[in-house]
Amino acid sequence: MQRCIWANPNEPLYVAYHDEEWGVPCHEDRKLYEMMILEGAQAGLSWITVLKKRENYRAAFDGFDPEKIALYDDKKIAELMENPGIVRNRLKVNAAVANARAYLKVRDEFGSFDTYIWQFVGGKPKVNHWEKLGGIPAETPESQAMSKDLLKRGFKFVGPTICYAFMQACGMVNDHTIDCFRYDQVG
Image (cartoon, rainbow, N blue to C red; front, side, top):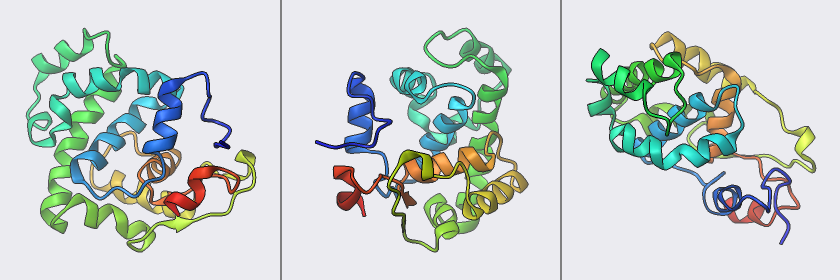
């Protein structure tokens, strides 16, 4: 079975993530928030590092419940900084809290985070036709617009490259290469 070249067959987490999740359009608010936090946590690291810590993140961050995370205080942040199961970067941990607060404001303004975030691709996935991994851009005009607006709304760790990775993960774009078995399935 042909997969995108990045889905290392020796890493079962990568294979499962690629085969079951990456590129599948997501419209669940909490899952969208989770992916935004995980993509920000990944900055400067490999995605496999974050995948291996994902369950620890879910436990440490109350199942990615933005209502709870928005209330985190200095004591809770200090506790998170001692947790070896997550990426213990103070800026990234603080960003998760700031992003929960910003997320709640966006959700209240737009009725759902889904409505807000999907506007950057016109409400439906953009289907690309990449032959090779090397052709896939690190950012696009859509991810740049998303980043700019998120930053304006108080989100952190949402640069254009992180936003594009988020868009790929959540199926806002189909960036499976055309030889990948998932290309037609998610397209």
